[in-house]
Length: 203
Image (tube, rainbow, N blue to C red; front, side, top):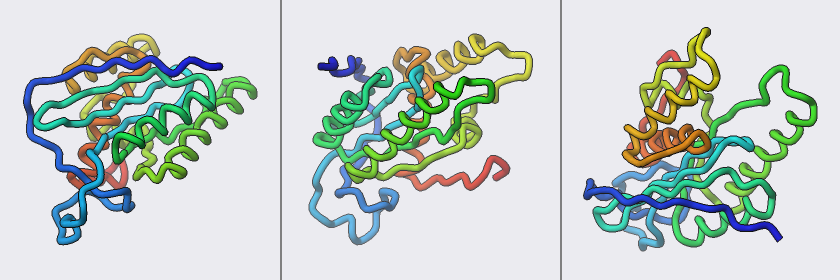
């Protein structure tokens, strides 16, 4: 029986409160008349970096206190399902997930494994009725203001730069597994709470 994914939780100094939200409707959180509906759960804004070297990060508020939850990507289908159920039981989840494909040069087996993992993540969000946006890496990277990977920049140097930038943005310590997801969680807040949509990288 697989062990549940380990998580880390960090709390921050007081910052403006994120309003509670209704059950998932497929719409961004706003201040319309229908916001008078009964409040069900607090909102969690989630970033998901697919792949075995990726992770999941959720940001939420209790009162004026912000919390950041980080998980290394679970390695089994059952562990993914269990994590998503736990998150859904506690929060209304609004996510941004990176829409990427296996990189050229990867083996057929790794491409198949990646595709299976991404499929499980998308299926979980559909089953648990999350609101989510699938975004090209260039879109969320442009939004959070990080410069794209340089042609001569090594993969290790690029990842280290992402970690440093994520630490500044979310104001907690991230790691190579959760840095991308942390930045996508920031993007999720803007997309779902504030309705900031970037249609293309040329906007």
